[in-house]
Each structure stands twice: as C-alpha cells, then as structure tokens.
Image (cartoon, rainbow, N blue to C red; front, side, top):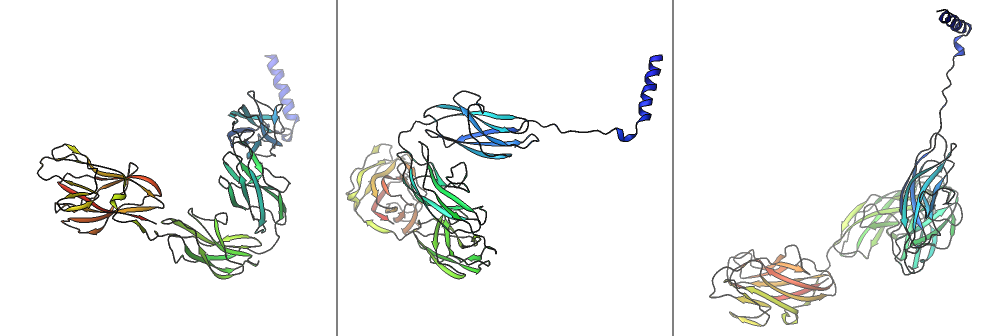
Length: 483
C-alpha cells in the first residue's frame, strides 16, 4: 500500500511540474522498399529482348534508379547483368542485348530508393535460333518540323533472311537513340514507310534513327537530327470536303483551311485509310501550302472497300486535321472473258441421282436431250419414278481467274413452276452466299440466268449443286467475268 502511495505522488509531481506543451507527439513516416512488377518479355530475338515493367509504389522514398537484371540462373540481382532505365515510378521499357541464341534467361525488374533495392517477380524467356542477319535500312530525312512534331521514316531494303516483326523510328535529345528511348511502331515487313513523331518540346534538337527487328535482333539506320521550331500561335483550322467522283479505285476530296493559326501553312492535303481517324502516317496526298480551299484526287484504292479520309494542314506549331468523312468504292465494270464455251471447262465431273435412287454420272457436256443441244450439263429423268436425295445433283469443274470475277449461267427445267430453284455454288468446297437472278422469267420459269458472288483471282474448283429432286434440269451457257 505504501509503494502505491509513493508511485502516485511521483506521477503527480511529474504531471504538475510539466505544462501541456511538453507532450508533443512526433509522428515520423517510416519508408520502405519500392513495389515493382516485371510484366512481360516481347520482341525476343537471337540476341535480345524487350521487357516491360512497372513501379507501382515508390515506398515513400523517391526511386533513384530502375531497370532490369538478368542471367541464366534464377533470381538474378544487380550483381548480375543489369541495365538502367532512369528513375521515378510508373511504367518503363528495358532493352536487353548481347544475349546468346537458343538460351533460357531469367529476368527481374528492380528499383532502388532511399531504403534499398527491391525486385519484381521473375519471368523467363528463351532466345531464338534463327539463321540470317540483321535487317538493312536507311533513315529518311525529317520533314514537316513544327513546335512539337516532325515526320520521318525508313526504307528497309533487306530483312536479312528473317521476317521483320516490328519497325519504326526512335528518337531522343541524346545521340544514337535506341528502342529504349521514344519510338513509333509502324507495322512489320520490308519496304518504305513514314512515321509521325509527336509530343516534342519546342526549340529543341532531336536525334532520330529508323529501326527494324527480325528474329536475329534489332538494327538501326543512319542517324539524322532536327530542331523543333519556336513559333507562337495555334494549329490551323480546317474542314474536310465531302467525297465525290467515287469509282472502283479512286475518289475526290479536299479541304478548306479557314485559319492558319498565325503561322504559315507549309503543307496541306488529305490522308486516308481503311481504319478510322487516318493521319499523315497513312496514305496522303500533298496539295501545296497556304490557306483556302483545295481539291485532292485519291487514287490506287481497292474496289468495294470502305475508306476514311481527313484533310490535314501543317504549320509551325504542328499538324491539324479536319473532320472525318467516309466513302465506299464501287465495283469495277466486269469484262466477259469466256462466253458460251462449255467445252473449255477443265476437269469437269457431274452427278445426278435418279428418282429411283440410283446414281448416274453425266461426264459429257455435248448432250442432246429433249432438243437441248450443247448444254454444259443435262439430266432427263423421263419415265422414272420415286424421289432422289436432295443435294446429289451437281456439276463441278476447274477454272483459273486472272483477276477477281464471277460466273453467270442459265438454268433450264422442263417443269414449270420452279421459280425458286437457286443452286448452291461452292468455291474450293466453301459455299458462297446465295446467287442472284439476272435474267429470265420470274415465275413459272423455264429459263433463268443467275450470277455468283465474287470469286477471287486464282485457280479454283467450282461446284454448282442443285438441292432439288424434280425430273429435268439443264445448265447452259456458263459465262466467266473478271474485273
């Protein structure tokens, strides 16, 4: 009891002897390691790979270094092979090179902050073992330089014997940029293309190189440089002119530039694509400079295809686009390339099942049946009874089309009233959509002309099958058209 009294007196003395200001709670934030994820390995080649990673949380302490580390053993660290990809949180891309072909590697992202170094999850990949060499390419001169954009491109003259799977340009304010810097992606394959570079700073010098990746690795074109402008004003204001004079391979559009934004329009025209919102990285037509109305002829289009088009105008501040319009090209005028020439059919076979269920092959096309002479295919089941199975009456032959086209043929039946007898036309075993009627009688017909859907260029096996079981049917005058 005496001990408790003494303790109470001591505490009371302490409390009385201190004012409230003596009790200040100092809440100190405790930092920790950053949280990071290794996402995926892409663009794997004989000697390199691209790794995507993300720092989700810096742990309360700024990330001063980040990148990936790798090795042929699991759980690599920065004491193994590693690279550096800047600092800070967020997503980043790392390019690894100098690897051995046909080898499995393990890779982890890392991040270093004031507390230490943390690692993401481990992923693995195996380099390819493809024969060949790196692509050969040239960087095209830069044009259309503005405050914040430019246009460049690449000409890939050789894929090195291995298909180019990714291509584009890379740029930086430092020399010899690589795909770990800023890049565009412009599809795949060899040949020439252009790239639209955006998001630049004004009055700044940039270095740009084309790049191409195949199964062996990534190669770069020559380096060129340019300096963005420093012009005040705004982007041009413009609208796209409605499309007119549409044919199977061309159309006419244009634009109306109502304001240059205070900076001279140095290039104008239209851009188009089969995808929406085309840019100058797609197909373009250049129609000079300045403001006002202009007309653009769009050529080299595909028939029966929907296109999207926008006008564009470039001034010192960048590229502006007009509203999007769309149009569909027409089908070209077909040309008759084979008329009433049944005897020219190659590999002809045919079959018709009698009403009594027995099958008969009709292999001749010069048949005289009930006065129908010269039919490509004919069957006269006079005097027979019973019902034949549906789908067993057909004529089949081979035909080569130099261009896209179609066939027309006449059907003749002895039985009136079959005004809905449309055959099924197969191209290489695949049924087309239903043919259309282009001539003959529309009811109680004896003669009817039908037209197939489009048949692509090339050599095909064509089968005309009749899903009916009536007595007489004839196929006459098969005509071949090409566009």
